[in-house]
View 1 (spheres, helix red, strand yellow):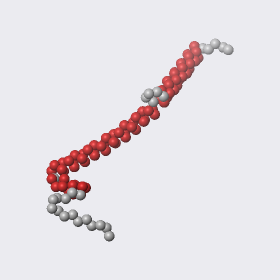
View 2 (cartoon, helix red, strand yellow):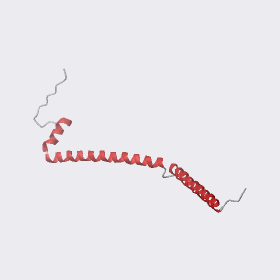
View 3 (cartoon, one colour):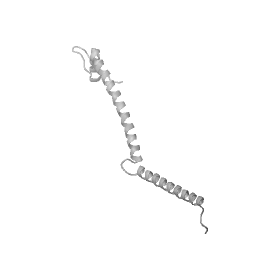
View 4 (cartoon, helix red, strand yellow):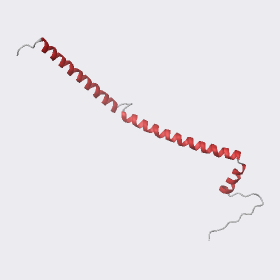
Length: 107
């Protein structure tokens, strides 16, 4: 085997350095892949947390709408005095003193 020239030796060293860089990069990528699949903050866990967050935000939105509807109903009770009487008559079947209630049975 004949000795390599200076230029060939330099090319060989560059090739060795390049291979070392590729190996280091491959190791780092492999390490990142492993860490992303296992541990406290893995990708599956982060996905589940994101899904839970989205569900909770939807629940918060639904509850806020329900609270707003209840607030509207409370305002109606304050501003429309007949509303309480209407509910008492419809839902509870209450009548005023002296009123006569006729109940018709189905034919």
